[in-house]
Image (cartoon, rainbow, N blue to C red; front, side, top):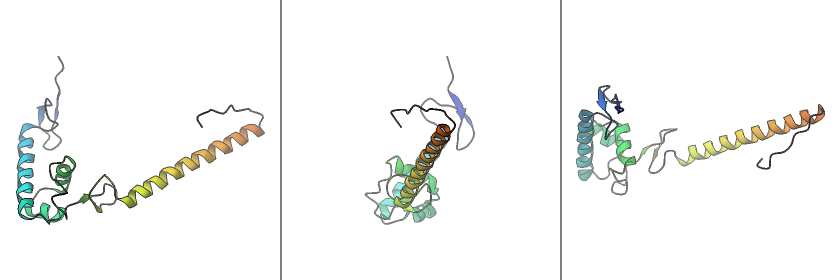
Length: 139
């Protein structure tokens, strides 16, 4: 029988990973943080994530986790957003803002174009040296 134990990523204590990825003591702390955020947002619906964090002492990262888990609703809190994982601008959906998504798409496209150009150059060099290359139907 294999024991599923590990260190809690929040406090470092060793615990049994049966139901959660954090130890029971940290689960209680996180639940208390959620309760603080929830109560604050009931009273201050127009709060930003920065105001919420400053007023409750709960980190931006933890509040973002609550939002992504669906525990804090953005629909009920019109000024609440969370940081883009790339640039830090506040967003209300996904992991990245539209600008960072566009930049990522362009970067991926450029890498593909560079790769295609390198393959074409290699083909030409191989032809000049007398080698024949069979094309793969998927390329």
